Image (cartoon, rainbow, N blue to C red; front, side, top):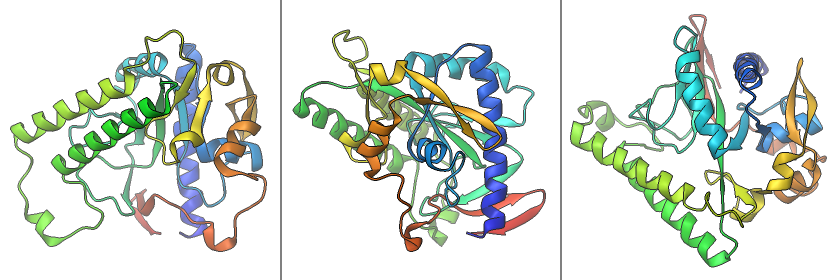
Length: 274
């Protein structure tokens, strides 16, 4: 993707993040930067130059509170809160804030969900201590993910047949919704267990043990510069980033500095190719 397109995406994402930050500060909802956004804050004091998304996370109760608040906050706003429930064609297990004034096409992800430059918001759920129970939970979740993707006709590539298909029937939408409910039950089943103190973004792209976060890491946070604002990160970011990336301060080879998500951007009546 060209530097111009990446720069435009970053501008929109930063604007979304500032709106997100305004809400969480107003309602005192804690959050942390995650994944590449955490790495960007530490290593680049902002976006990783070739990254094309932003990731934040919050504990499940805080996440649900945020979703409820946003339904009112975004009524007269230029943003859309996309969840499995606000967009019946959306198959993922976490929320996104979309900029309504943009449109994107994603790489290797063809579907009928709403599209726009986005901020990812991940719920963090408790996980069991037993490796066998961890495996059982993630297998259950992945199985339900697959069923939802199939029901909602998610594809890796576009094809002429997809364009000729009729809209999903009420029965298909209902079946997908039931699978979504089952998936959320799988994700949240351990949250009431007081003895458990490890949390995970169960939708993580990383291997299971790469992004497990302790209660202590979640509760002890600090602010770091991020472009022309600040973002909240765990004070123990070194342990978290080392677990995910190894030597995270070392830049990857040039041929691995690739944007992952956006193939085409439309904004201000202009089209920008990746």
